[in-house]
Image (cartoon, rainbow, N blue to C red; front, top):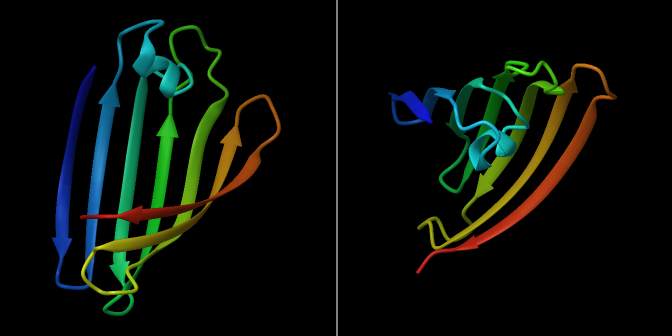
Length: 118
């Protein structure tokens, strides 16, 4: 697996990142985690809305892999990172994701993550 990326600070209110990944471990763990994709590209931006809330926007693209059987083509997510105490000790992260598939129905998903840092 080969990964490369760039993180960018966009002033004090936003950070962004772009990453490219190539996976050649057919049919290994990393390829399976990407649904069989060989190449993938991810772009994300975190925008600080208040001192305790940031909005996250993520987009990702996946190739159809060497076998041509990868269903996931691209996906987009929007979420929040709420730190109610403002010190990163507790994060509450709701997120909604849309996945565009090649040959099967597209789908929507949602997650709610709680993270406590010590």
